Structures are given as structure tokens and as C-alpha cells.
Length: 316
Image (cartoon, rainbow, N blue to C red; front, side, top):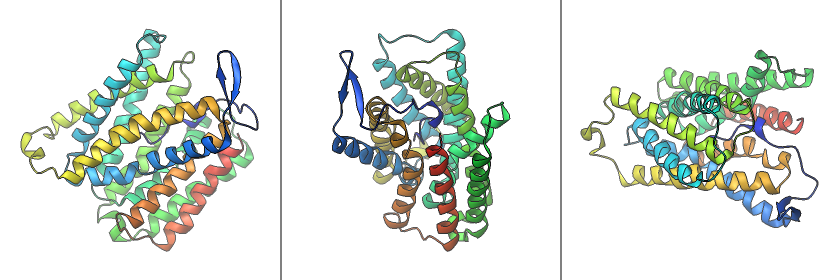
């Protein structure tokens, strides 16, 4: 599952109305169409974590994630033909970023979902933009006082969610909660590395390199842990298999196409709303479709996290 393309790579707003370039001219995109595309993006990426939860019910987590990313990487490699190729330095940067994003971020989250609920995971994943800001500060990016306040509020919300989470949410496995707290940090690190490449790289090409690099490392890790043993795959349910296919098609492929199209046709602040809407969608799906119970701390802490992320993105 692709949690989200780095918010720091969003282009500058292009105007009050959604526009796109067509034949060298700016073409207006109907606002109602933009809304429909946004809703579709929310649905694709917001349902990803619940789908991951269903997948790991019977599918080995790292092996399943590796298969999804490698298949998506092959598709993007085909789509990247004829596009500008990155330099060797850029390829190395993208490969390292892919490992951070898909192994450290996505892979770790997938393993954690074998124990924690999708609702808890969605709330914790919402902190990714906050970690991007904090890690950016560590490498010299200026952080305003307002951003510092938002960081305190957002991370305070995470603390509230974790400390108040009942045993039913963490599955009796504190390690999984810790893993899901670390995963957004690694995802944010990969996002920053991607955003700070030597020069802009074609998004399709960058995604192909990252998916293949991350998927390959995940495959090797899965092999070393015995997840590719055929006996581990003998009892895979149709529900888990369907969830894996859903992640490949709607999260990795359709979601990416929707996102890139919106970047070319809609104002950046509007597109960036995915960062705080999709975690909310994931939590709602977990509570309704998967029948996971939410608790008071999840509402309070989640509101702080999503509010801090929304204000931070709006302030850019």
C-alpha cells in the first residue's frame, strides 16, 4: 500500500480554479470533476490500511507486500518507457528512498497490522506529514513558531491515542504499536530523500525505481524469514487474496494515477487534503466494515493529529 506521495513535493497552487496544461494552453477542469477525482483518491488511499489488515490475516505480510510492490513496479516500468531517465546518482537516491518508504515504512506497518487494528494504524500513520516537518528541521529547513506549535499538538495527539488504546486495539502486542510509530518516521525520511533529489525526476520513473528497489529488498527479507515457504501460502483465504489484488490495483496503480492527474489539474492545497482525509477514512472503515471498536482517546488524539496536519498543510 502506498501511504501517500510526499506532501513536500506538491507544486505551487495554480489558481483559484482547477487548471491543467493542454497543448501549451491552460485548460480549465470543471470543479465538480475535481471533487469526484478527490473523492476517488480518498477512497483508494483511505481504504488501504483496512485492506492491508485483511490481507495479513492469512497472507505472510512481507511476502505479500513484496509481491504487490514488484508487480506495481513492473507496471510502472512499462509506463516509464520513453520518459527521461534519472542519472546514476538519482537512481541510487531513489532506490534508497524506496527502501525507506516501502521496507522501513510500508513493510513495518504491514507486519504491525498482524497485531494492531486498522483504525489505530490509520491514526498513527496520519502523523507522516508532521514527521516530514520535524525531520526537515533536523536537516536545516526552517520551522516557524506556528509549525512548532502544530508539531507539539500533533505528537501530543499520538501520545494520547497510544496511552489510551485498549488491549483490543493493540492486540496485546506493544511491539506492534511501537513498530507503527516508527514506520511513519522512516516513510517521512524516504519522502524527504525523494523530494531533495538532485533535480526533479519524472514521477512515473521515480515510482518504478522505488517500487522495484523496495519490493526486491522486501522479497529478500521475506525469503530470509521463511515467508516464501509454500506451506505459509497454502491457507490463504479468498478475502486476503482479494485484499492484495485491491491494494495492487486501487492503492498502488489507480490511486497514483488519480494523484498525479490532480497535481496537474487542481490547486496544491486542495490535493494535499488527502494527507488528513485518508487516515480518517481508514479509521472509519476499520470501525464500520471491520467492526473495530474506537475509544475516547482515539477521538481526542486523532482530532489533534488530523487538525495539526490540516493546519500545517494549509500554512504552506
